[in-house]
Length: 108
Image (cartoon, rainbow, N blue to C red; front, side):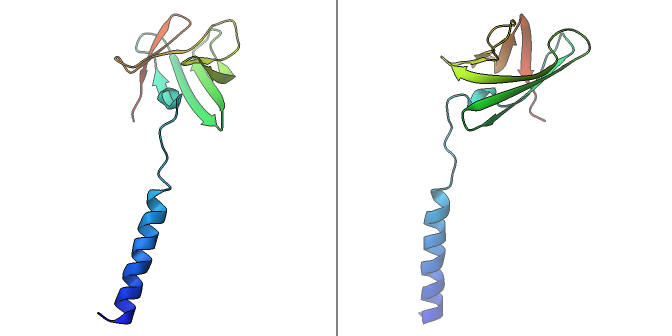
C-alpha cells in the first residue's frame, strides 16, 4: 500500500473513533422532550432542556395552561413549580398527563 493510502486509513480510523465518542447517551428526562398535543383539549406542549433545566411552553385556546413554565426533573416527573402539579410520563402509552389532561407525543 502507498503511504498516502495508509495515512488516509489511519486518519479515517481516528475520525471514526472520535465521532463514536460524540454520540449522545440518553439521559433521565429525555422522554419528556419534544412536542405534545392533547387529542381532547386545545393544549399543546413544547418541552426543551438546557443542562438540567427544562422549559415547558404551553399553548391553549383560553384557560390557565398557557405560557412558559420553567421546570425541574424530580423523581421521574417534571415539576413546573405551579398550581397545576407535576407532569407525568407514561412509558407504555408514550403519553404525558398534566393537570388532568392527556397528551400524546407529536412525532412530526
